[in-house]
Image (cartoon, rainbow, N blue to C red):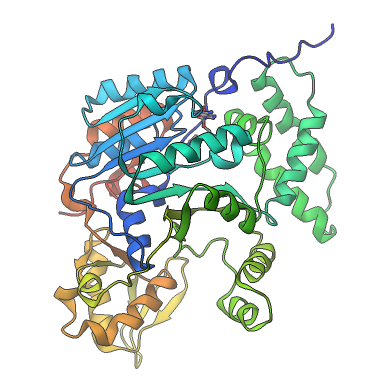
Length: 436
Ligand SMILES: C[S@@+](CC[C@H](N)C(=O)[O-])C[C@H]1O[C@@H](n2cnc3c(N)ncnc32)[C@H](O)[C@@H]1O
């Protein structure tokens, strides 16, 4: 029997809804911090409005709005089935500060009541056709407040090129499968078959490809369908991305994941790149290539960006958070265990005392001003520790929102087997509330 081809007129997200999850660095406080520390606009965190474009089943907005009852949230998506799932969850939680709208970027602007202080679109920019992308950006330009923040993420050249090869290969090999789900399952079978004959001592390129195919094998059919088999999925060069954004009047503020070590080349390599004759864009592309960075998550604002650096008062008002565990007090300087199990010696006595005091109250933090008498003196060291992920800084303390996680987490566990904390992290349930 000849296989039927997939119905090309049906919305693929209606056929097979996406497996969306909360995205930690889209939390409003995180975006506000990225902007503050890079001289961008200051978000009004006491009261604000958020719009998520391409919100799928609402997995990101449901926990965000649950804990942040002082703010208003709206999600827009063109898949009727996903919006129905999102509305069902919203109703179960009785959330009055969250609304979902079914509509397409190309026509939905009149269904939305702007302006919004934050507009976010995770997993959308690279995954839609150019006309939908442009309509989305036009909508952002008209609905964002003048001091608002736009968060986007996109698949980035040159790092994504290898994944793009795997996508092209899987698209070719699975033509004619009868449904999107079967096609995605076939991708897993083919990936397993491709890597099964490999021996331990293979060429470095073969190992790289094997790693990519292993990722496919470990993904859900929903993810494979919309990442590898989506009709649109393209990577952008950094310059290409900013040229598009400039057309709609946006300029770059910061990377939303600016202090994440993943996908980052060593500092010394980045410094050497800056010293070479390459301009910023070429140096960035080179670093991205060498660390195999596949995705970028920029925060933008209306152009022109007039940079106003974070003042000492603003910095002093931030919260400092650390989970470095003290392990040895006997040597000349105390040693702490870092996030990846590495040992770190802290030479500054006051710092080590503060870190010891912060670890037991994690995931909560304390205001910098309450811990240091001379913040100007320690600011550079704190910024360095932040860049090394030894501490976190926060504009507000989500632990103070005082909202019980239980009904939310029960629903999340039943739907996605996750539970999101007030810090917008997918934590194990016992860490979701934090210590008293
Ligand atoms: C790859 S999914 C990302 C979902 C979610 N933001 C995440 O990252 O987990 C892309 C989403 O964009 C939505 N979408 C695609 N084209 C759209 C359009 N033209 N208008 C509105 N939503 C669209 C899809 O329905 C889908 O839910």
